[in-house]
Length: 206
Ligand SMILES: CC(C)(CO)[C@@H](O)C(=O)NCCC(=O)N/C=C\S
Image (cartoon, rainbow, N blue to C red; front, side, top):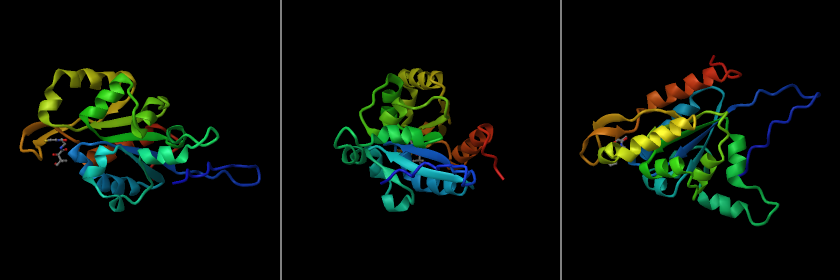
């Protein structure tokens, strides 16, 4: 996968309004089965460009042919960087994206982000994230995990970094448990992205 060339504007060419770039991060919660729906709904927003960064565990829950945008995973970083002059994918991606949406954010990746662990492409992008750009996260995990005291601590840490939580909801989860931990509905997530887009100016919804 290549990175889109940056829109170069010169005196000769008119200023080209580029698309607003949303980088979706997906992790190993069963809620990752919603990725195709989420991407499809985001692509319905005029002027949006979408790419996805997946963890290895997340791959278990969707098939790439149902995700019609560039899908980056750990191997892409390795293949792209062979010698010192090669690009560094997680740095390219932090520059490329205008907004990051981690949906779902599983318990494991929540813990990594809260403590600065960056052992894969997704956590490296987040670790290097420009906090002047919005980062939205959608926790999703079993109720027992959600209710563990460490969850509140780590969600609080992410909010302290300035990241925006799209809270989980109570449902009868796929494992049969009833309670909090289900990822927010895709409609809720897309509405939140639109809300943040409108606040960040330069990108008015028509
Ligand atoms: C998958 C979906 C969206 C179906 O409505 C819902 O159950 C959910 O968000 N689950 C995420 C919580 C989770 O990771 N549970 C893991 C063990 S119960």
